[in-house]
Image 1 (tube, rainbow, N blue to C red):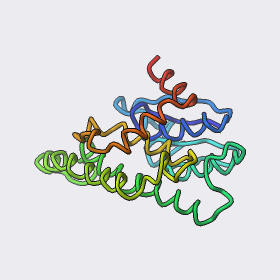
Image 2 (cartoon, rainbow, N blue to C red):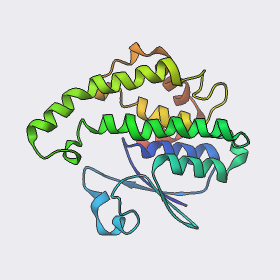
Image 3 (cartoon, helix red, strand yellow):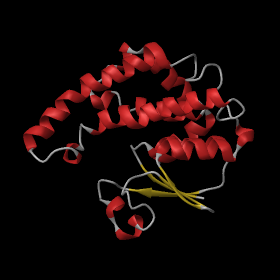
Length: 205
């Protein structure tokens, strides 16, 4: 497998999941600031012009929730999702879909306003709204969605890799992490895992 990844992006969650699963993979580090995602050679892989993209024997997968589910199902021995419980697995998918469709979109308004508007004044207005929107998102996670030490309760899962990834954006988005002690403790707990520490060390190198 080959994972296309950009530092600081949501693709970190997929990278962590692959490490947690003990998967063999090739990592391709891209620079979205340099526009690597718009180069013809990458568009041939993922015409959406986004990361992550995971090249597998059966084809290319995109979108973080899909890649996370694929990793969990491909490496069941890693126990990265409640695969034997359809309802619990659907709950995991619901959480990851919320991060993808709501939290990430709210975050993207800070520096991707051109996706939704053309006027500079609109960009500034969207950027100014990010702290409020992201604070509301993490308030919901804190109060209703984080079930225990990990997202689904006692067991670590793909949801935790994803929450860790987006929680790392809080400070940059103007969110005070100390206002969300459960989320902050979760971020610290996940950062101490060996697979995560390996990925972060390689990112810092």
